[in-house]
Amino acid sequence: MAEQVTKSVLFVCLGNICRSPIAEAVFRKLVTDQSISDHVSTVHCLKEANLIGFGAENCEENSFFPLQWRIDSAATSAYELGNPPDYRGQACMKKHGIPMSHVARQVTKEDFATFDYILCMDESNLRDLNRKSNQVKNCRAKIELLGSYDPQKQLIIEDPYYGNEADFETVYQQCVRCCRAFLEKVR
Image (cartoon, rainbow, N blue to C red; front, side, top):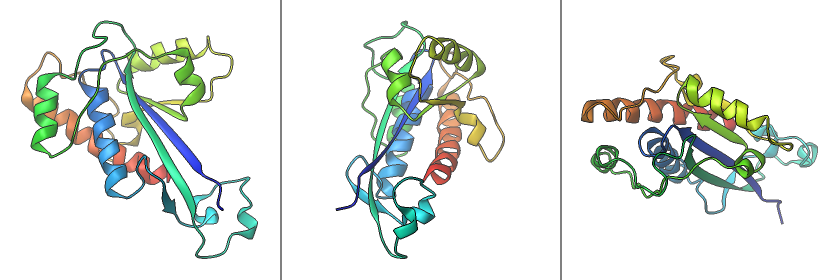
């Protein structure tokens, strides 16, 4: 039987009630729609997936291996711990038919050791995460701005908290673009 491969991504913003739960929900939907969800599915040959160490030299042209995704989101701060996503973000996601179920939590030391990718929304998040990762001996996560994947080159995903519904729609659109590009890169 083929060895199971798991990839993981943690989306991070300041409070974990606006941007990061939107990114989490968008990415989860993209993964599910492409049949690469938290349930085991298949991806093309190891050679095509560009993975090393799984015997790719013995990979037949039409062979497959199982892949799972672990997807979550968290905050750099403790401001909103235990709260659901902002009602405007929930309304935006509902409008687009994307389920959203999350309770705000803070990034933990364990997250740096267990996630492959930690994708954040702005430079303040990035500084906080890099500082915290330096306190973790076995940090394996690649920490990046989610906006670094934006084909429209909008590096920062602005916090819509003090804005209106249109600002949440902008965050949603950015997350869709960035998450699609990220998924294509890491598949």
